[in-house]
Image 1 (tube, helix red, strand yellow):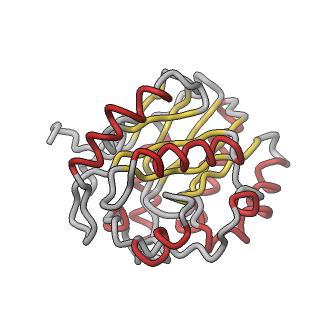
Image 2 (tube, rainbow, N blue to C red):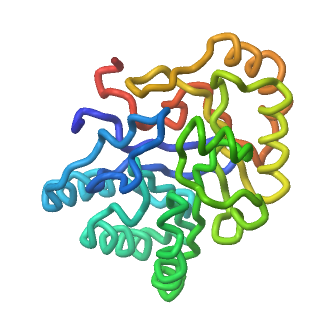
Length: 241
């Protein structure tokens, strides 16, 4: 997947640069709605070569960088993590954001402290998808063994929610967003996009979300809204396909 777009600039709401790096593979890899884990390689040297090329595009113009990698930051090789640290120091980036699966949360404090010593504040984002724990674990198989939103937010400043799924309602989607806003600093709402996974979006639910829920939050500065999975500018093909 080396032809994917891996660098972009987010100019609205919290302006920042964003990079899609490649790791050695999501450790969970059981989510029934996700095929992002296909973007991986066990060749650490090849991953670093690719990631270094992507990171070279970062300018530091906003002082904020978001790093995503189709998994957790723990799936990135040590050389890539060191390059991210050098980049932040060199470009004056003071706020750095990573994604981290719930099962990798124990690695957050040490990573956060490592960057703090360089004057870099780390924010972490959790893909919780929904706060309905029964739906999340029995249907989506997300791999989160905690049900209380307040405990989910202890090590995370932001959360990702997934909408447009079979069985969701206007009320349940709005409840998830409100819960996220109560317990987290920011919420990223992702509309389910058709992919190769077992669970596919329900067009009627997607339509309900777009008509009845999305308009309530489009102007909320604490809510990022991805109506397609490439709205942040990364993940699509370079040829536009």
